[in-house]
Image (cartoon, rainbow, N blue to C red; front, side):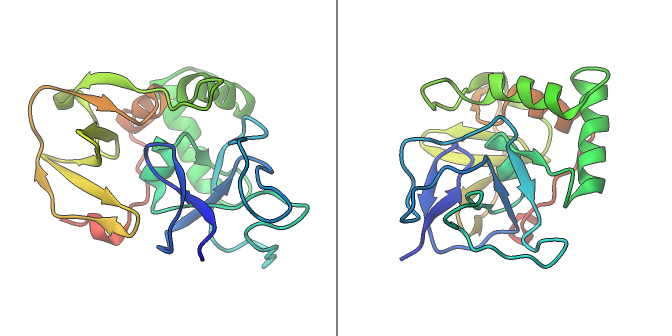
Length: 204
């Protein structure tokens, strides 16, 4: 049975056998038996990391004394869930993200300031994802929106329906407003030019 460690753009963490392009963490949030309790973070530094450790270290997905490994279909999903690139294992991506943050969100970006701002924008104290409304025409590529009960990623003139194992057939980007899942600062980072790594099924 798969572990409860797959993160969706809605912020939910579910059990699903599909594999993604990235892992990441929010600290230790699992119990000794490897299951999740009520906690969904133990610190504000929510990261998106490479699947392989730079030094070849592998501690397993839910070690007794180690961070809880979470998994994402791709980087756009990780951004929607409120995770930023890791400074240690994804240094180039981190610097690109920081530069886009400085340009689109605030000058003088540093990790503590970014993570504090992101935490205010991504989740409530009761573990609910913070969402907002926006005109679909104004949203940059890589942003996730909610139409009905389904999550879609914005890409050009289309929306791509999300599933844990990949994106479905594109639909035309409609007019009007939509509920945005991607936190506001992440939307600004994407608008400022940060290009997330996307799953191969996103290719139109």
